[in-house]
Length: 103
Image (cartoon, rainbow, N blue to C red; front, top):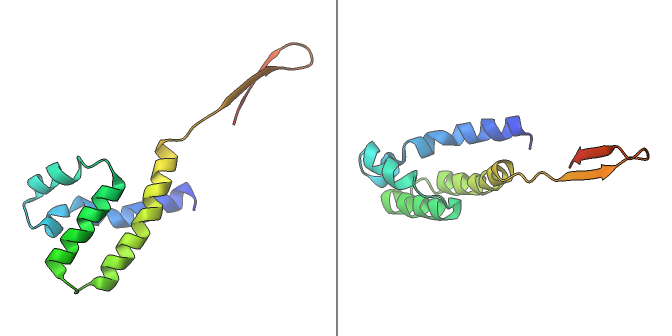
């Protein structure tokens, strides 16, 4: 998945995360305080799943399962992007000049 595809897919799911109060059954400000402070994607996804199950019971199972299935790869790719590790290989060429290659 390219970065552009990642951004497009993430944007399509942003509506769910920008409106957690709809799932939590509380006002927007309270839900934002709760959900945007959760740094663990896995914990956040489990909370959202439990709230959806509580609020919707078995209604929207197809949507919920699809949403959760799509979130995990997006979370993984997001972590790869924001925690990108760059290696700088420093060496010398045949003439003794310093070289630097980013890997």
